[in-house]
Amino acid sequence: MLIGIISDSHDHLDNTRKALASLLERKVEAIIHCGDLCAPFMVDELDASGVPVHCVFGNIDDKFLTTKKAGASKNVKLYGDVAELDLGGRRIAVNHYPLIAESLASTGKYDLVCYGHTHKKDKRLLGKTLILNPGEVMGRLGEKTVAIYDTGTGEAEHLPF
Image (tube, rainbow, N blue to C red; front, side, top):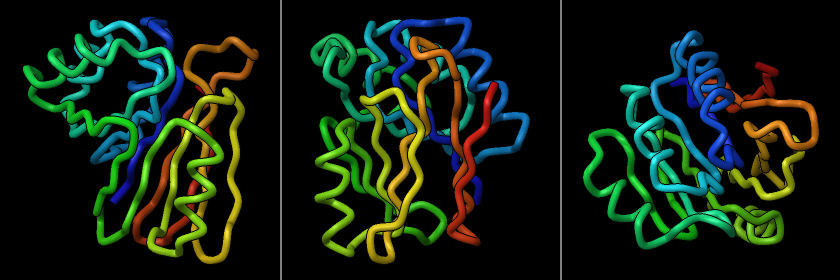
């Protein structure tokens, strides 16, 4: 199973559409968003992908309205601050912050831990757990990237879009 991973879209509709198109072109079966969608209307963009989208809150998301919007969507599931997922036979944790990601990874319970917040791509092992920041959709720091995780191989790669 291929999983697309994005983060820090910050209401940037054009880049979000490009990021999703890039992932869907590669036939991902699910998408993880590591937070900072920002406005609730971003849920509509994620929902339009047509694949399951698993989201957590970032530090500037509208928690009340985004929760309401996600509850009415077909494909988007919002977990709150931390998500624990079982996708393609892999245990995956998702949150927005790097220190929480490292804490989750240090438990050894997960194959993959995803985070955002820094707007910088990251891929490293902590024990047997892969820690992954897909980078940013927004493009504030210049490079716009997403990531793809292959549950069959346990490998991930960053992709510019």
